[in-house]
Image (cartoon, rainbow, N blue to C red):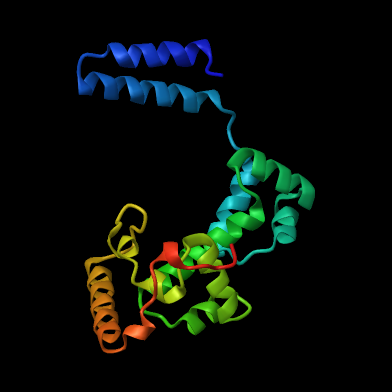
Amino acid sequence: MPSDRAWADKARLHTATSRDERLTMAVDILGRRLGDHPRVDLQVARAWRRTLSTRGRVRVDGLADEVGWSRKRLWSRFRSQLGITPGRAARLVRFHHAAHLLAAGHAASRVAAENGYVDQSHLHREVATFAGLTPTALAVAPWLAVDDVAWPASSLAGVQAATSRRAICASHERSEPWRKTPPADQLHMGR
């Protein structure tokens, strides 16, 4: 149930007379709400930075030892403050790096080996879990190549390479239509 403060904020937004006024109010409301939450523990922040610096190739036991907490305490604090467990965070960070390499044209077998996946099928399952695609389809996904906000390291060369890969795949699909990958919503991956 929304609080009195939330209702008041909503009423203020409805009474705004211009788009700029609503935007200013929204920024004020969001800033105030962000300030209402407690800061993240230094140990949780350190564990997160370590997860990023290792590209997700870190064990939760090792993180707990580094920050001086038990595994259970790290898991609990990390989840309560960041909304995700340290193990899941590591998987997402590892997937993020693997997706970049796939988009850059690296072979799935090489990406799997370099990113700590047990084998290529392990990478395939993780890509299916997080993106709902195969590694090949993820590599040429248009949103992966052009989104400079989500993927700031992408450059024009990366976009051109992805576009070239899409063109090659399209010509291959025309010559061998039976190999065409179905859209993600038509894939049945054990769900």
